[in-house]
Image (cartoon, rainbow, N blue to C red; front, side, top):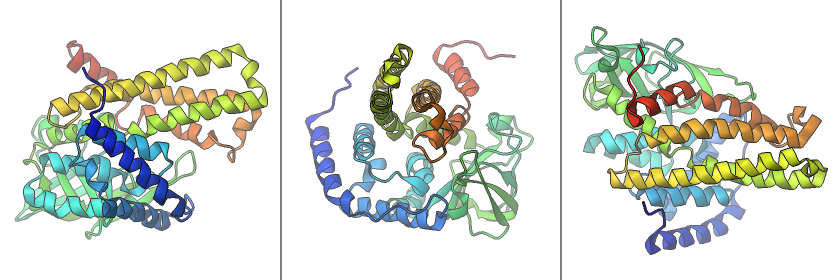
Length: 377
């Protein structure tokens, strides 16, 4: 498989680098991590700059290779991360682009690209996290609406979101995977209650969401009724296949910073640490190549990432944890200081083997869909 870029793609990279070098020095300072209204305004302001410059469309109109170049170069340049726009740009938006009707694409995609609206993800429930298909949030038809009752947890950016990509059970009598529907729910609808959750790292980008007979128009359904599990697999393929691209680049940058820190504080003299950092360097180089392979496969199959995203997500989750464990070795006793670089990152890395599908789930996907092994009983 050819993992090289075309001349047109390299021209796009050069133009993007030039634009980033011009605009990044003029950006205002980032708001406090706890100032979510401020962070929303900052993140959407950056998205608007991308839109005005003609770079926002790469998320859906560009080829997978162009999206890869965009994410790589913006991360290398230290550009703002998508932040509050994460779900809209990398999850819900690509799903609607792939599965939505022309009317749905016209309604929801431009506001995300312009930085006008924020989405959150309402998938997990208190008793349906790793086993997502066991979700119990109920939706029943009442004329032109679905009436939704239930609760969601770990709902990303719910406190500042305008819309929620919501999974509901529309046929309780159907087999678990066949009675699920994918809805776009307005967060301002009557009956929606949001309670922020604080993580181990002290951040509050997740929330519990309680739904008390919330009315959602049937026109907001993406895909057919009871076909939501298939649509969800499209969402998760983007989440596992391309949404972490920028983070791989960031990890490679952190690895170089760790090596420099170790040389300065004397930890570089430890041969075991040097071997550890060398192995991690090889690990992240291999993950980057796997990312390129997954992108090439997506280009050949219509733009939606395949099951290779589960291979990537499985290994990346553990490699990220190993990276920040190595950071603790480099820092020594300073790894207990929350004000030091990489310490909060180490705490947040613990969630990566759970978020976007646990490692156990990814192993099942690899075993059944790639290796062809039988399902467990």
